Length: 245
Image (cartoon, rainbow, N blue to C red; front, side, top):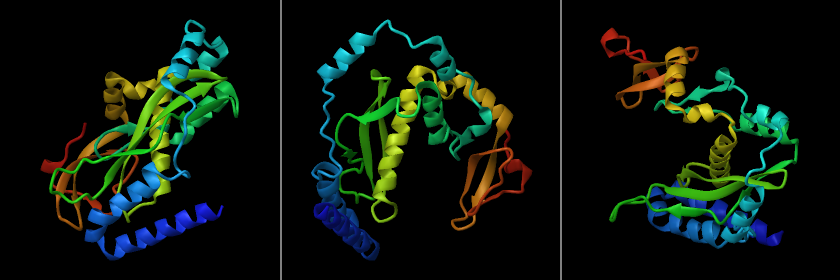
């Protein structure tokens, strides 16, 4: 417990320095946090018992053994289109709770688990000589249902030092991996079907030219038809800038 408290105290100290000295944080504090909290910390490290050999063994034991029809019906049920959201760049997503609710309905609460297969790692995407404004955190997870290995996938997110919570970033990694694993058992697999995506956008979304009131930059962005633009974006009134999908 004392070790955990000391680690948290050090992290809070690093984040306070990052806010006070942003340029130093990119060059000095990012490597420090990475070394203490991404690769070496026993608090965040996961010593996986699922080696490639054990995962392969688990998969081989369940090949050709489908889940009961009652479970398959729940997993492959039609997607509730009203719960789908669209980001400004046009990518579609569902809330994490949607996947969890479907798994709970199919396998029961506690009947499934998303297990990390290794440590959180970071990818240095900055070019040589550039300051590191963020790190890309990545981790692999495997989905197990009723004691059976079902799927595995990576989750990743960009972590901006001093601008967001590290714990929230790790939760986002887990949520992305869960969505990718769920598509292998038929949950919301429509979100990976290009034709379905095009039809959903035509029905539920629109693409418009908007202006950032802070930077005065214009961009062609997406929103749901029943949503309104939120600050700092406002729609460009000139009809020549508008485009509906």
